[in-house]
Amino acid sequence: MTVQAQILQLLADLRRELDMALLFITHDLNSVRQLADRVAVMQNGRCVETNSCQTLFRAPAHPYTQRLLAAEPSGQPQAIAQDAPPAAGKPSGRQLWRRRADIRPASGA
Picture 1 (spheres, rainbow, N blue to C red):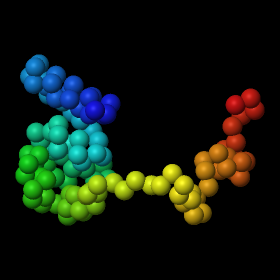
Picture 2 (cartoon, rainbow, N blue to C red):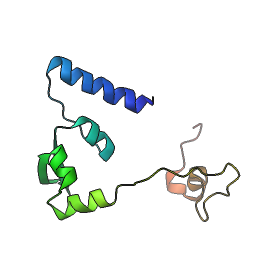
Picture 3 (tube, one colour):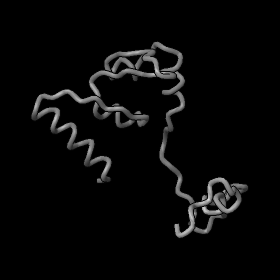
């Protein structure tokens, strides 16, 4: 069990045992499915849809919510071979600070 799964289980147990409310802010739709009774979807700082978790995931009403759910990954993740070449044209973060003088770490860092 992952640390994330353990934390979600702990939160769910606390909600049940203490009969407490929980405000859970996340971009992780799978966590929302596991933990939420009600869901509010925000776009650009505004709430565009609220509903029960089951209803929202089954029949999203707002176009933004529909796009969020349509973009959710599905299926099983594919493993990347250990000998796979690095992504083309993607420098490592370490190289970035060497190229940009304005974000170089202070001396001694």
